[in-house]
Length: 298
Image (cartoon, rainbow, N blue to C red):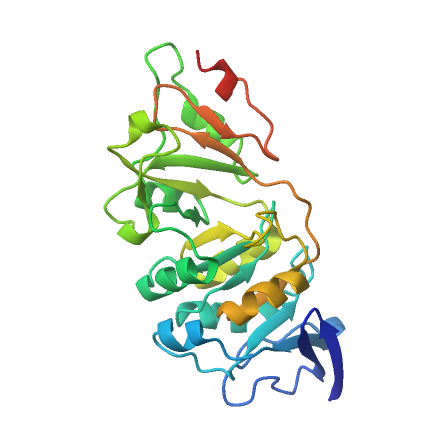
């Protein structure tokens, strides 16, 4: 085993290189039944050692079976080494909150089925309870489970909206839909940015076109609750995962999956709860002919 100490912002980072026959997380996280191919026999993991956070101490339930600190895993953006994600998936199942890549910016995510993890996610990012969280979905089946689905028409000849949406997903879009009773109440808010929908509980859904994100969703076999990563002070996207670890690690973050630096281009948000699909935020996803921009609302 080779050991190297690096500096990442204000945190000391311990870099461990090991062969697949060794367990990088003794007695806590293992790669049981997950062997990388021979050509990938030598791999690198990074464990960022950060000071234990009072937020992690107070709000984590249950505690994780891993050493205290931030688990930092570097992966191929194209998903060729998805076996590295197995420890991340196990932590998510136990209630961890961490950072994963998407096809737009990085997201802080946790298991949708863990109420304590959702609560911790809000506390780590200091999100107001009234603000919405998005669902990262594996497929349209998840969308049908946790929302009432896409509108089938608007009475004005637009009857193929579902087919149109299918051409956008997977992709860089967030669609706001009415939540179903299956979705935990912690994930919803009343209304969207428009006051006339204030009586409805809505949620944003995504199917990211990202190999690493999709691999995590497939391995955990469930959707994830997420919110994009922004700087708490400048209110700007944080695109470098090393910086994310430095900023949010002390706040109680449990892991970071590093798939490279991203571009400051968030998803396009489309509100599907009104009479017509309306763009709330123009982002990476191009405006489609059936979408209405905010300045076209009149």
